[in-house]
Image 1 (cartoon, rainbow, N blue to C red):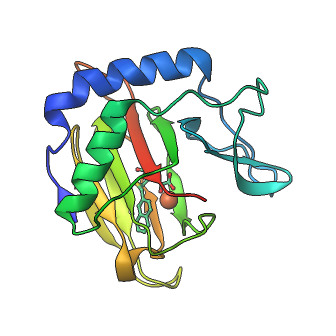
Image 2: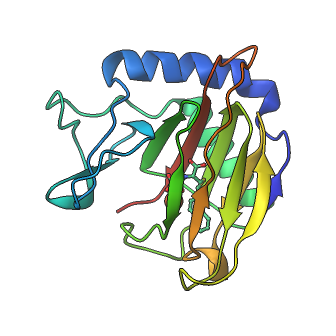
Length: 194
Ligand code: MD3
Ligand code: FE
């Protein structure tokens, strides 16, 4: 379910909170298990954070760069994630992980499934800020055709139920300048990982 502009009224507060989080856990371009450096830079907040390295994809309770726990999930994030999930009839969504993706122009995310979480009955809530992007919403096989969904600043999407394991990705972000966020796109995904 796409909730257009659902986070718009809180965009400045979300952006300020991301600034505090990445002061403690800076954005970094992680390596895939296959040895490629991702074009998207990532950080996390919450009890668990998504990480990838030569050992594989997983959720970890501390930042491998610092050895410290990830910064806490701000109350605003928990509230927003629960309110968005409720709009899509996923009651009582309490995420334990928030992955923060930063796309500079040219950065993209190829088609993948999110399956490192333990309970696929839990939805994922995503919040987009900054530059627009085209989201690819595919099927349950990588080769299935994908719909193109434009996502802009303040849009929130809830992914769950029969769509939870769909392949998805993001086309390369085009150059631009956003008045609040600058020359990048930020995407926050709220997840129940464990
Ligand atoms: C669709 N992030 O971090 S939103 C990711 O915009 C990721 O940065 C994208 O894909 C981004 O893994 C897309 C999140 C999303 C998450 C799970 C999904 C979209 C989904 C599951 C099924 C279909
Ligand atoms: Fe994903």
